[in-house]
Length: 200
Image (cartoon, rainbow, N blue to C red; front, side):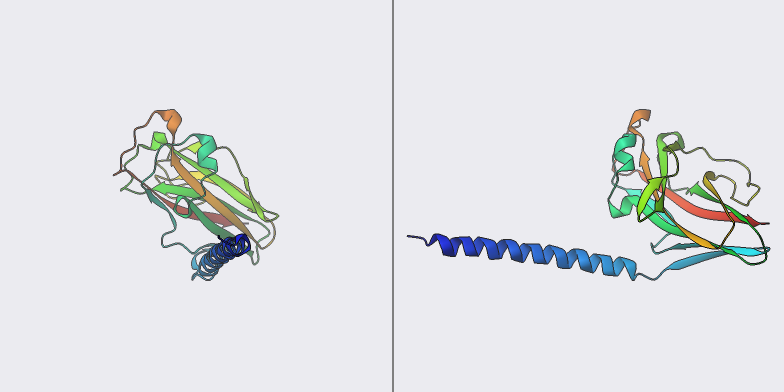
């Protein structure tokens, strides 16, 4: 006859062992992410500076192996390769204010028509990310903006800063199910993120 106490202890130790393993894996992943070397792009302005900082391999998103999503699904994307975290630091020197804008530029290898792609930006506030606006269909400008965002890019957010501060952002992108687009295994969405600014 099997001793129920021994069996219960075995199950308990098994559950504890698996739980400890999961915690160790999550902790290791967090350490590797937060200790990843940061890449910084600096834009020197007259009277101040703007820095774009990120730790991914590219300054933006490069996704494949995806399906079309609704806005509700897209805003909740939690796969690490489906969103891009970055920071924008405004550093005032002699200027009183810095105005900066964040733009996305679709790369040539993007195979999904731009009218079928949506982007969604969130900004960190009190430790959580909150939306800065609604999901937007990509629509690029043929001209360089007044602040310097490149041609064939789309401005997704503007900020005005009157003191030196760092803002943390999270960008998500997806193919819009509402647009009726058909996605294949070979489709790619590739976006480059840039920040441009002006001090006054």
